Image 1 (cartoon, rainbow, N blue to C red):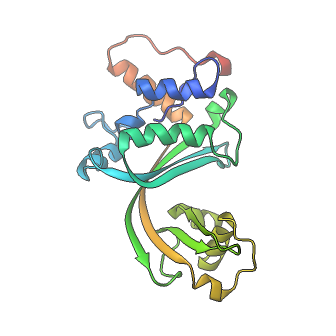
Image 2 (image 1 turned 90 degrees about the vertical axis):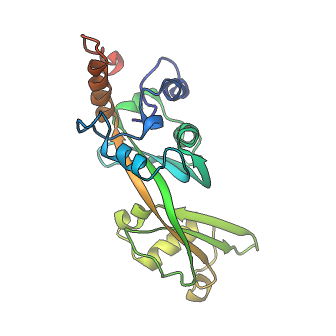
Length: 232
């Protein structure tokens, strides 16, 4: 799916090379699995149905690692971007430039999961509680204790995965945004909150290899792709 095929040297070259060659197929539709219908994945057909290939959307790319799927990087934009250029840019940025983590290394590739979230249905709400856990992502804007405007966001799945209620999510998001003072209910009421939804799709490195092998044979090459020897 996304730029993750190994190439010698740095993971930067791995990702950059694969985006250019479209080997991981995210630039062609963020595929998870093919179901035999013209070689397109269910999500790719959904993108076509909603005309998202030709439209511009905010998007986030999230990397997780290991069996417990620990966060390994997540960066995106609320500016509407063309799907192809947005995926190219934020695939690399989230893998290599998330300041919370060191850049990805070659050794991590087999344990990675990559998710792409296309953000839709933005709504400004008056009440900071007016959103649904597991359904809406939220973006908050607030004035910190130093008088500076700050923003922070959680994608729709975050609160549900963490088992948080509305207050826990808001408070965690305030801390994520750098708010250090005590959090009171009166302060929560000053938050400007925007809720949104997303179309999310995920692929593991293992699924990518199987997907690549499938397309290798579809393209008429009669012998299997060689394994990535570094991990064999």
